[in-house]
Length: 419
Ligand code: HAM
Image (cartoon, rainbow, N blue to C red; front, side, top):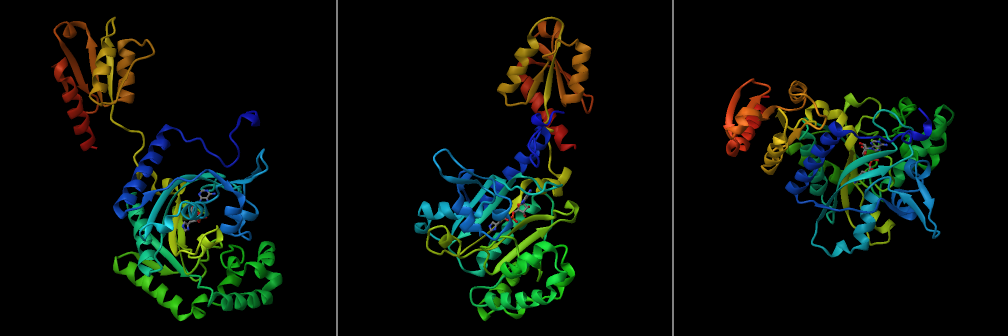
């Protein structure tokens, strides 16, 4: 096929069956948000570039290599949103949300753009759901967002094990960083090309490099550098969630790829996803509002990829299979149309032939597309009645037009219960 008419690399067309699954997840996310009191926030698809360069950090992959940035006709530098946290922080500051009663709980569902190398589970346009909690420095806030993540995953039948770490704070991280730089200097020539560059500027990132795993395993552990406050915070978060029966494991090499994290970081992986196994990730980011023009506010949150959740949950998420009725036309006439509209008036999803098919072909079509078929027209119609047939259980009945919607609804509901 002519490349010009193909979708851009790393993007997707979502067809009705998957779109129905996506819609199911969207409803799941908003119902979990409601349970915990998170209000929906929507921010623009693009922001001024500084929001991400300063917010996420200009040493990060998403800012350095993966940005979709452009200068518009008015000379303004803009970037398609690669992640939601910095954008929400900008909106929090700009709209004065720090004046709201604390904590402020927000969630979003939005497309993100990263010019990454496409592969299974990694796209250049993907969708994320995210939860952000502002105003509380307490370990209980970290614990709450972890419980939100668990409830969400439970909604699609996943029982997560959460990997957790703490990246320390301005008191203890510099000491750790210096120890890491010294360690990687010793191993300099053995590191991969990327990490040789990263080792001095962003040594924490070397820890999660897949190629340098052996070297990273011998690196100093940040836990030996945590200050008293960071250790207490981490212990409290772990204890709070363990108390709620959530399985958490400390992972010393977990560092996350974004610069704004402070203390807690966490991820949930699913082995069924292959190389891109992170279902969701997040952490605490107390300094972020100060990077985007506001006063510092403690905050913690997480985000997950919708496509990855779909892949991990697979067929446990129902697709388009809404039970439907099909109205077949018996003989010439338009009775089927009338009946179909009557069923739709009663909120019953209903299809009717648009292909001028014979009755036999309509019945075949009905058995492919619907759970109940109604035959409209013919002699019964003259007597004010229509024939109804259950396509899965084979039952049949003849009912007056006035009672049809109730019968069809009951049969559809019963059919669903039986599945
Ligand atoms: P992130 O780990 O970069 O974190 O992205 C969050 C999630 O989005 C990942 O765990 C993954 O499931 C999904 N994801 C990321 N990139 C792609 C991609 N190219 N294709 C498909 N899915 C992808 C953040 O963005 C932070 N804002 C999370 C956060 C919220 N931290 C605190 N609050």
